[in-house]
Image 1 (tube, rainbow over the protein chains, first blue to last red):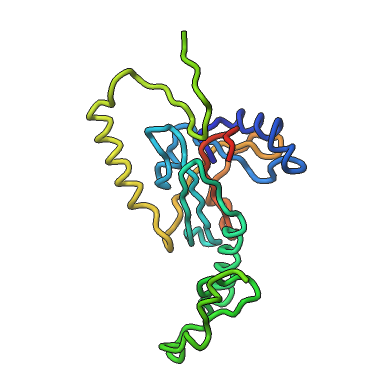
Image 2: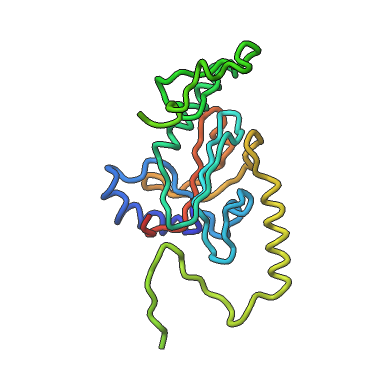
Length: 133
Length: 83
């Protein structure tokens, strides 16, 4: 979503993005001309008249599970967004019985919060697990 | 004659010569306050409808139509920007 019109979205997809992604952008490119949606989401920069790089992960119940906002010159890390979605999906599937510690990615151990884990996280999780191997 | 400028990731904007009126600044502050109160992790995402371009068609997209699915909502500064 940006403040550009859907017509400009069409031209951008046809003239440039389809040369990066086969078949063009697969998801809807939304237009927020007056920045109203961006204002509600707190990412519209009224002085510059543009939306900043806000990214919101919304679960199947319509609940915001996470967000990230960057100023325009720095691009996002898509892999990190995907990792967060995988983590939120795991937690949801476990009905809250599992949690993903710092540095978790698919295949790494989760934590099972409960009275037995109090003061014992050091047995399950080491600081090097916070970093990619 | 207009002055040429370098393009960057910030979209150039138009405006009246001089500073913002105090009313405008006040209104913006109020809007910012409201916006801050609305977004919170663990809380409902505000619903909206927006026109969109999707695979060769113009469509209206409503967030609540995606109930039951995971949604990534991405904002960006503008089409044809570089990052």
